[in-house]
Length: 291
Length: 291
Picture 1 (tube, rainbow over the protein chains, first blue to last red):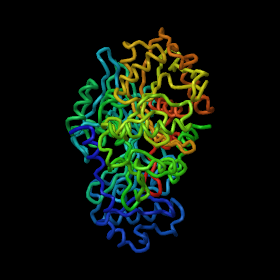
Picture 2: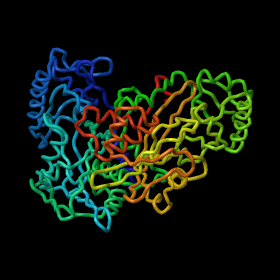
Picture 3: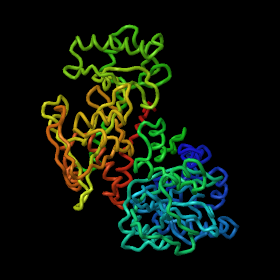
């Protein structure tokens, strides 16, 4: 592996297999050609034209869209879709989190509709005399997704109805027992985007990167069963583990690479410097211009 | 002004007024429609076809290209082009500084041929008990470009034949009397790109951002006449001056906005957060796909 390999691995999507879907004039997401028959089977919800899908224009408010989509998704669930991943957690449907959501959608369905997901990903670090250290959690072996893999210090999906910073403060408490007085000091320092495909599912996601400098005498600990354990690693060990292995959950590598760049661990004269920094903000422009 | 206004001001180029020029299969830059007759007047150097210009294929080494172009540019200078800006300083012609240059070109000609320029831009800062401070220089009132404007702590154009970090160390000594032992601690932390047009000139430039934490008892001072004076400002004052005024040289605002983002001075819940961070890495895709 290399940093660029991680970027390529996250950005494996082939958008030629997808068509966009719209709510009015706004692109809401992407539907894979293998999932399209499922969408088409629900009479009246979507219509197709001009190489794109269009949500029924009669659903003219976010609430109406959310309700109609939920009824459809519950039917799919009854047919065996989404397996154990249904969470009863509403995600906003929008390309920019700061804009009012077009509707809400159950989290488990989001990648099936190629809807962008959001979320804070925080790196908790300690400045010690012997150098920068990073708190590295290992995901619970009981988690349904990526069990036992290494993770960002604190990270979470972004539900509708709460700000990114407030959501991070909540996740800090739940995942790492970081008290509010510390968590509020976390600083948004950038974002990372990628286009990841898994079968018919697409994640055109954006992660907001936060840094939190933690005092040397503070130890995070798992609070909600999502984390197996925390270890404080020298930044250099994290750097090498990201660069050389796939031990971290795939998208968490990008957040750490962004951290390494911002904290000056790469050289400006590294021949891959520009490609790495560019790759962390992937703009996917497909041949048919739907990216 | 606002941060987004600065990004728009730097990215004012209308690529529909330009055509790309190539060395072999590699795009070297852009030529404005008003400058095209000048280029066409030099028989044998460029040929035009397929809405693009092509440097004579007989110039099959970087040295041959550099020599042929230099002869042309000297003629233009004799005709009154470039005015007082001719510097006798060779810039590399390449889209990626890490790649071997296709040729070299006199600095004053670079924006006339829409060739990407490179350069380190460093923010020198001090962590004081009363908060982050930034060393702000005012450009000499005798400089031919942007006299008297505020600037990044240390910045310079990037000539051929020296690395970015080594060039920064040299500029630190020349512009701010920062000794080598301090300057080597500067860290590359990202880059900023923009597409700026001024008449027939195009700057599709990239600036490598460096941070240098300076000790509280160190004071930079002008060493080569390029800087009028240095002042240590609270980061908040720099933030407000960038946001609300045009006192800083236009492209230096972008480097400081990148600094503000990386140091957590913007909120993740600022409705413009994503647009600002995206805007610092502008990918220009023109309707005819030459961007």
